[in-house]
Structures are given as C-alpha cells and as structure tokens.
Image (cartoon, rainbow, N blue to C red; front, side, top):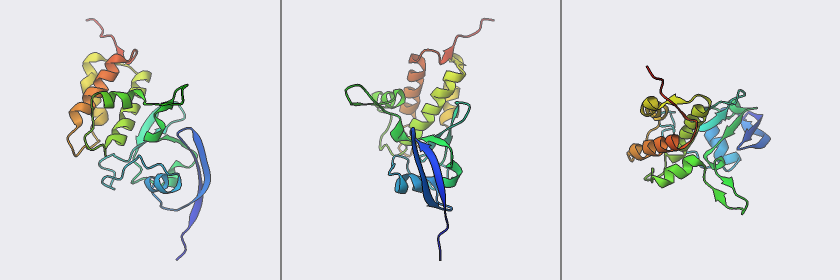
Length: 184
C-alpha cells in the first residue's frame, strides 16, 4: 500500500513552514506533533468535542478563530497562518520568555489543575480578547460573553471557575475591551 502525500506550506507562530510532503488525511494535530515538534496542543477526545487541541487560525481580515486540530486535516491549513500555544509568549530585551497576558492571568489565578486542557483555554481566551479589541462589549454582558466563548471547552478537573475569573479580570484590567454603558 502506498501512502499518498501532498505538499503543505503554512505559517505557524509567525514562521513559514514548508513546503513539506504530508500524507493525505493526516490530522493537523499529528502534523504539529510529528512534523514541526509543537506538542502543546493536546489530543483529548479525538472527536472535536473537548477543544484541548484548538489552534488560533488568523484570518485575512485580521480577525482570529479557534480551529480544532484533531478533526481537521493538515491540508486544510495549506497557505494559512496559525498560532499554537507555544507562540503566545514573547522574548524581552534580556532574552527572557515573557508569558502573554492571557497566560499570565491564568498563572496569577492558578486557573489550571492538571493543565491538560490549558492550551485550548489559552487559545480560546486569546481569540476572545482579540475579538473584544475589535468589538468591545458592555460590562453587563461580560459574564455571558465569557461563558459563550469558553462554552465548548471541557476541563475534566473542573477548573472552570478560575479560568473564567482570570479571563474576566484580564478583560476588566485591559483598556478598550469594555465599552461604557449607554444611559437611558
């Protein structure tokens, strides 16, 4: 039996990858783990339900969305730009790794227990925050917006409260994400 491959080229965490010959039907999660050694995205359910495997897919209009990698073939991402959990931290002028605001908020709130679902939550919260930068919401709508944004993510250790608290506090501390309520 011959495995059929096709080339794929994409941008991951700001770096061009490829062209790489990849088997047709290979899931993106396997591509990330086996071809580019990015193992932060987790295989949880393998059915696209738990969202531990999500990456951020950057859209041409500047928006971003979550995409599940355990059920999405690698070739779907050909020509696209994505970010994995490994791409959030930055390097400061001293050469030290600095967590993203979402990562720092999660650490400050000790939002994770086992940490297995954390990459998916980090990516989802990042997409949520980026969406609020483009379209701020009223303070009164924040709790429901967080629930909606995180609703598909499963934490088997029941760490939801701390994740949600970290996201809420980060949103409230970040200028421009909450719009003032209208009178009347």
